[in-house]
Image (cartoon, rainbow, N blue to C red):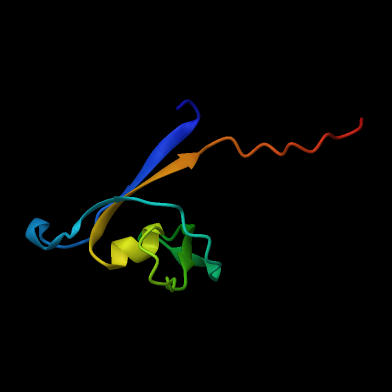
Length: 89
């Protein structure tokens, strides 16, 4: 479908330990993100984006839970996030 890409997650396991493949939904859990200022070996500043560990439930239809249970997950993601609200100019 146009405007859609597939997000594929593969568990960091030997292939014989992978439980299978699941088509999944994108999880909507909220988690804390942060930006950390760091200095590279040439003494230049850069910023590293980090996040606290997400906690997923047991619903194997959600990508994070399925991944935790050793499944490869394939999640269709819609790219167009344009609001449908009409703005007056």
